[in-house]
Image (tube, rainbow, N blue to C red; front, side, top):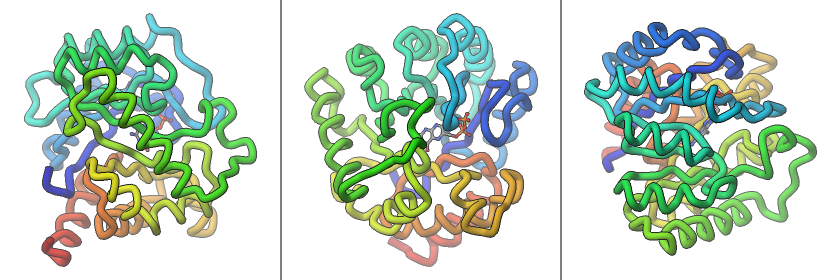
Length: 265
Ligand code: HH2
C-alpha cells in the first residue's frame, strides 16, 4: 500500500467521544459514509461500539443491529469497508455483508477466534495495542518503555495471527494512540513511530480529535482539534505511518497529500 491511505470513521453509536449520536440513524450513517468517500476516503471504518475511556461493552445483538444494515447499504461505494469490532459474531456478519478488513482494538485478545475467521475469509486485519480494556485503560497507565512495550506486544500479536493462518501481508499494526496512554506516552509513540514501522507491517495511526490534542493546545474541545489532528498525522507519515484513521477526511487528505509530495518517497 502506498501511503497515505485514508480511513474515514463512521461511528454508528450514540456515545462515541467526538460524534456520538450523529450517525446512529442508518440513513445518516450511510450519507456520512458516502460523503467521506467523495472527500477521498480509501477505506470506511464502521463501528457500532464506542471504545472511549470508561465505556462499557455493547451487547452483541445491539452492535449487529447498528452496523449490519449500514454495511449492506455502503457495500457498493468506491472504498474498502472495515469493521471496528472486538466481537467474532459482529465481524462474521460484517464480512458476510461486504467488509474486507477487521479492525480489532483488542488485537485478537478479547475473542482469539477472530484470527481464524479473518484467515478463512482472506480478509485484512488491524491489530491494535490497548492496555487492558476501555473501562479501565486510562487509570494510571504505566510502561517500562512505552515504544518497546507496545512494539513487543504488536510483534507477539502478529506471531499469534500468523500461527492461526492469517498471512503476514494481511496484518496491519496500530500503536493505539489514547488507549491506556498518557499525553507523554502518545507523544513518545508518535516521535518514535519508525520503530513500530520497522516491524515491517503497514502501520495504522489514529490520533483524530483525541483528548491529548485538546490538552496540548490549551484545552480544545473535540470540534476544535483538527489542527492537532493534521499536525500529528503529518508527523506520523514522515515516520513511516501508512493508514490514517480520521473523522475529517477532506482536510486530512489535503494535508497528507501535500506532505507526501514534499517527502516524495
Ligand atoms: N480509535 C478509536 C476507535 N477505533 N481503531 C484503531 N485501529 N485505531 C484507533 O486509534 C482507534 C480505533 C477511537 O475513536 P472513535 O471511533 O472516534 O471513538 P469511539 O471509540 O468513542 O467510538
